[in-house]
Image (tube, rainbow, N blue to C red; front, side, top):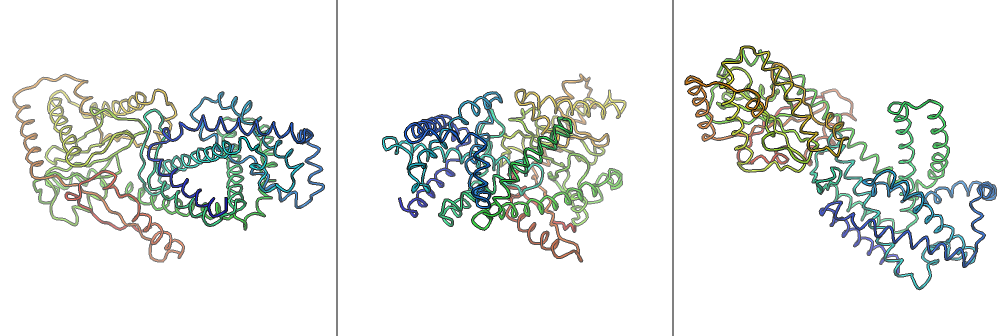
Length: 585
């Protein structure tokens, strides 16, 4: 086939592959095992056939002597050729991403007794063929295939290339998801496609960006050697970074002896730096592509992380003190209009700065104010009865509450009135139980202490129940969710209080409860407004030019194109109120 037809077919295959991703990794990856199995059997058998038919003496290549003779004979050209030789091992490392869900022993056995022997037979077979057909050095693989199995091999090879690409795509989704969770990447839509495996996800935005990038590279380069140089550069850099990370793990996690670490580092760097030195000569022949992509990714992640951390620090340090809230009085120093205001915040404790900014610039606030903090936990689902954690802020006359809404990765934060109805139902339940427990709660210290312990225990139990087969998620949970609770602003589950203590009721309690519930119902009928902060980050006057460009242009552009909180939380647009504020870094 001509080069143009090959490029066109490759683009069509790429479009088809990326269009299938929304079905999920488990749906696309089920083809992996049979195709790769057949592929390795084919190349192993073909290699053995060529060795027996053309030249069995190529097996002498296993002797290290020929490595020395090769470099002695070729000199500098032989050293540069390491950049091409590196391609003989690229692709095999991608298999780890595809079979990562299998036990460690199965992976070790598969690579040692199946993958490795088949690869050795394949390359030795091509070498035996080239001994008698030196003119076919550019297409030795397909030229060495017997005519009787050529087209089956061609189809299986194409299928293996497609399935092998799935590892890179899935790996990209996983890296983006972790970067978003750590605040190092703009918010993108992440869809979990499997109930059993947390890592099987789909990112629509990243998927189409990857597709366009792959098509651009395929259509622009057209030559296999340039794409190979780009791939080789990426692989050798990954090998170096992996070795550096392994050294840190051996020292800080495994606490290995320094001599063992030194031996591992020396042997690994000797091999990898040898290849890296050869790859440098290929930078201008396609190797620059992964470097440019890495530089752009680093810029985006660095700018986003810097601005996100500064904005979070601003919110933490500018929280409104409880003494300031108490000093405002029951009306908060403003006109309390009928209705319920849901103030969204990322803080699980304390009153956010957005609230003080809101009441400073507006003369009125709703009769009932609920600070809503939405947390996404690394579990499949959060039961409805454990989803909302409610706490009152200040005296009853303030009508202020806090609600932490917890969702698993498969739970949907639904639109319309579903979220409002469930939240207000839990709020009513909290008021009812709180009213019942007041006569027997002689000490506020007891209430706070119990709430802290129960909330943390409940959270740990929730993670354990949803992930009894995935113990590693507990470590991830600690970095993703802030469950620190202060004694001044405690979050408590309404159901936990109801199950913990039995209370007596009298007519006074019932009347007080009825009055507050009726007041809440009246406010709901008056309307529910969703109040969200819209913080604009800008560089301070007098900042360096690079910082101004990074904050005022790069971060501003990323913040504009990333998914807004109102979209992620499915806040109805007709009841949304954005409160703008500017933060200078």
